[in-house]
Length: 417
Ligand SMILES: *Cc1c(COP(=O)(O)O)cnc(C)c1O
Image 1: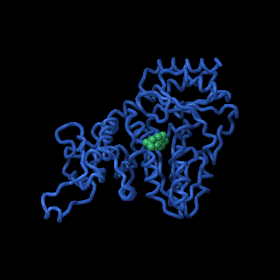
Image 2: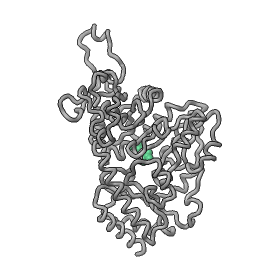
Image 3: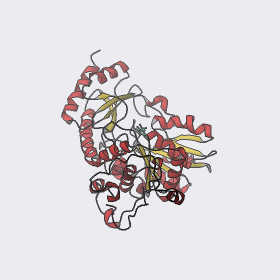
């Protein structure tokens, strides 16, 4: 892919696919993406291209200088073919994107994007179910710069429209919310934002472009923590943001001004992870559905928060807008006995206890979002207020029957105080 005459050097992170290439299905694109012969040479994967300095041939060469554009090696901070191959692959997987900027973590992608589209005096609307470090940025990063953050209920479209003022420049969405799993009507909310002149940013870490092609659903910037599904092996930190031409240029310039760069070693690992992303997501989705269904049938469980389940409140929207799922979902135990929840977690043998998700191995973590909400309540309206203890599962590639037996052990431990 990307080796036709139109693919001269100098195009760096930009999408240059021909109409033919657009007809390939995602599973094929994921194999081909980013593998330009000028970057791979005669091997399959782009080599880890380490380097900071370009050496000039002589003084005249130095005086002529080098193009400081994507796809020309200028200085290590501007990336090398290894990072370009990853960025290019992510661009090709996101329909509508003109380019992708890589960041040293998912959090750096969020802050880098917000700083690219907001200025002092602006207001940003942030979904109330946002990943906690995103919420923290409102106070720690944006407020000192004179940028105001207003939180909104992602399920209240009317209330959302009413929050806009002439100073609202951007909206940060996360759907499903990565703990409580609400699915927002992104096409409708993003259309409102566009009408009001604000940039729609989606934290698309849960679905990736394979499950939710964000730009074709009305968002302007799709960002991901590559640490999760794309890396897929719990051994790297990285983030990305993909956008159309004008916003991509803004993201790139801001990222260069901030001096952000990812290591070529990590980029090569992320590319390796990316090649199996599709099959991992399919397997995790099917195991997660099996386990979510089974948990729904258990008397100890009050709610299973998984939009992929047919009777979930958010299932209709999920069914309408998403092409694929993943292995991350949550559930809420009946009652409010934190010691019981701890016994549940400690009884598990196959689930590691840890933050993060999207790796090949299953993980579990307790969560209590009550204090991290300001525009919505936890537990949500209509629930028994006793039922508030959340548990999030990241389902990996283990056999789902083994995972089910492990979760059974946990549920048995609940009652054994
Ligand atoms: C983990 C996560 C991030 C941050 O990613 P890091 O790579 O850990 O910095 C952002 N958004 C969501 C939804 C996440 O789960």
